[in-house]
Image (cartoon, rainbow, N blue to C red; front, side, top):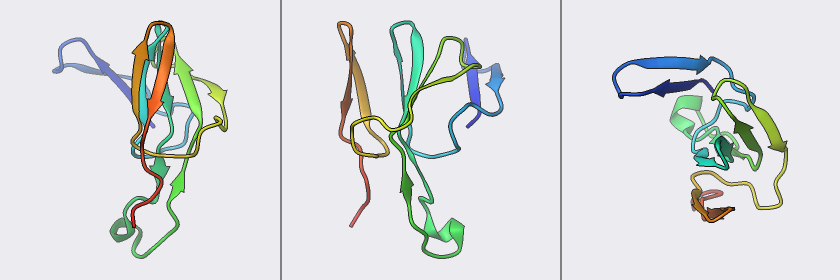
Length: 105
């Protein structure tokens, strides 16, 4: 859950080593209303890394930051289903959430 930034893709600066959310894969991020927004994602994605099957845990929390270093939780449990890998888009003054996954068969 570290956050990095760059102006040129070569020189990177760590904004924070530990953002407010728990470490996870498949989170979604976008800029909206002049801030960074991060949401969703999951943990325990790879049974091979965990040395055996383990329950995958999905999230539906929402976080916001003006600077990438300081994060505020907007929702612990948003009204949409927990998911990883969702697509996000901004149109006008609204943020849209599309798809994602909550497990593969």
